[in-house]
Length: 86
Image 1: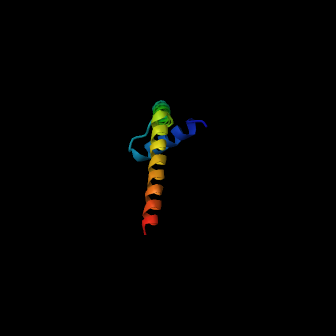
Image 2: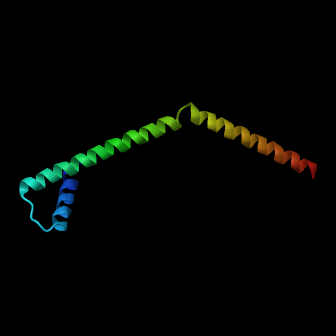
């Protein structure tokens, strides 16, 4: 997907929001700035998401899963014992 149409749309919105008319060079510069901001934001978000996935798919997630399983087994045994005492 090309960022050029997104940047051009943003420039058009900026032009309609300000009173002064922008030259073609100014519009081109703003378009480049918008493209770069989108690229930087996307890269930053991707790195953050990758870090989160890496953290949750590591040994910590496995340990948490094992603890949850042990708690569920203990809960099931407790309920079974309590049901047996009725």
